[in-house]
Image (cartoon, rainbow, N blue to C red; front, side, top):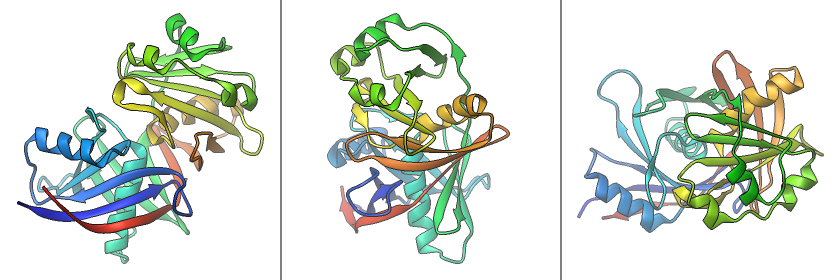
Length: 264
């Protein structure tokens, strides 16, 4: 049975037990997808990131992400966690790149004492999603949607976002979309919560991909390219967000909680 390096990282966290948990595993080659999915289910984190050296020359590494139930097209916090692991192994490097199957080339770079993750910004358009609004439990002031499966619901203030008690089983029945609720923040510029029950994650702790949506969304409203953000989950997480052309740069620290070997 193969044994591979394994890290448990808390991303967007400056101490253990905060931010969002991710497993990072470095493989020599891709096993069957069923094996990757079984490992994702075994780890039971929102995402497990799998890395294989990229032989194409397009990037440093190939990267795929699995929740406990499915492979996903984009994951921010597990990409940041992967960058944290790889840059820790090669402290002389300033950045690392990843070739993904559906999200293009991604980058993690050093940014002072923290890391910055570059994701493709995801625009949304004004729309309606009455079924989801009813399941969230409170009427949203505005609804914005992306054909990629991201739904943004704007609320008047942070208290309204924190008070939501959505029907998670009902949201799961709508598919594996992200349901992102957001408002102006109290101690940060914006606040959010993110629900993805159809993808096996009832409420995500800190969601990089959601902030790739929120970065252009809020940059337009705030009238500036950069702002601070807090994801008001049980674990919670602080981010900096900056729109640079078509890239959303998300900044934050990571902490390695466990380092070891995984046998499968």
